[in-house]
Length: 171
Picture 1 (spheres, rainbow, N blue to C red):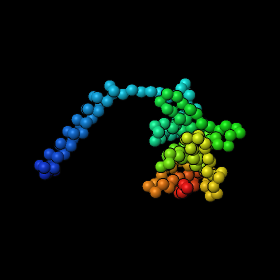
Picture 2 (picture 1 turned 45 degrees about the vertical axis):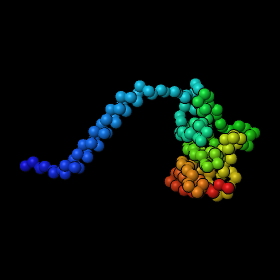
Picture 3 (picture 1 turned 90 degrees about the horizontal axis):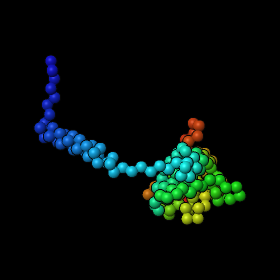
Picture 4 (picture 1 turned 180 degrees about the vertical axis):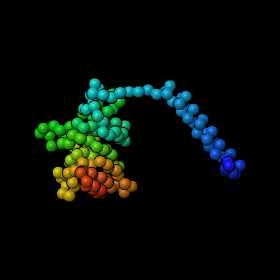
């Protein structure tokens, strides 16, 4: 025999209203959104250091930071500025593979690379490789960074089968 599920009329009415709202939202989204959508490509032709973006981040000043397998790029809506290793410049970015980017409350950018965490002062454009400066920071690939509510920076490193979570206390 057939089985019927009894539904309270109030609940059924509420579910129908939600279903209608979702359908209307989807119709609105697909009807209105595409005609207003504009696409801008950022490629090697526009100056990107490499064609494979590993991460994207927009800082508090509005710059878009693009991590690649060959360095870091900053896009200002008009042009791209590349950051990579510069021989003889101790403040340049020594790592090439960028995995993640975040910004702290002071406006410094924290960058996860294959050689550990790096801090960039975007005002002076100086990079500091933390594993080279501070004992105990692993020189391993940083896959994620974030700042907690107390201003501490947390980093996740994964390499081979090793997983490391560590807290950096900016001073």
